Length: 235
Length: 61
Image 1: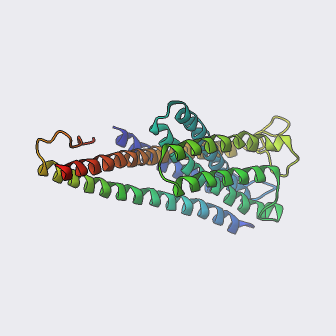
Image 2: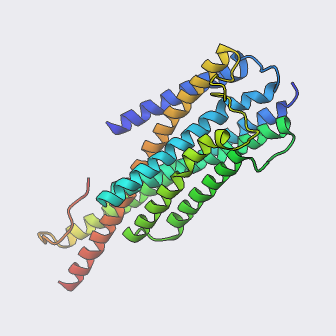
Image 3: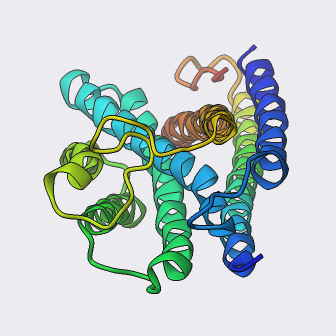
């Protein structure tokens, strides 16, 4: 049943993603000031949304793991952190490729860029910890604490453009409360891209989570077999 | 068409990174399936080797 849902989500995300690509390159009008480089934004924002959603799931799942101590929550947090890291990397990459033609520099220590980079570093640390240490409950608990603390940076990234002086554009909602997209087709294109990335994220998360669950079960199975082998040897 | 290169580079980066991650997930899936088959074989051997021994582990779904 869950494999059917996964397959359906996979095909749906592919279809919506192709629609979004068509809209980005053919349907949405070219922005007057930034020109063609503004089209990077249609996939840059959904990447940020997926990264934030993934890190939010890491925090929630880690909280549940610390509270209940059930391995399923740790597996969910690990899967979400990995996907969040992929999309956070894409946010930094696409942001840099947008900044060069618009600002004239690849990188600047702007508040939003800096807080996003800190977020990337913290989850990089989280994944390094998971990759280098064993699968013991102590490591899982420590990783859960890191996952929760790192997720505290997400709201800071979101409000950074309002808290500090910044050159990062507030495209979705400006300081005057309006949105920065001049044409309704731009808004629709962004919404379709957001839907495409959200479905893709759910599909990826289900897939990776199922894998991590299977890995956990395999580990237990391996331990049981080793025990049975010892008993068989004794008999 | 000024800045077209940056647009192409940004979308290429997105698709390449996503493709690489999906490839990584797909390879992990193949490795897990191989590991599962190996364990099932081992379990079968153990069950055949000592039939009736209640201490053997039950099969996982």
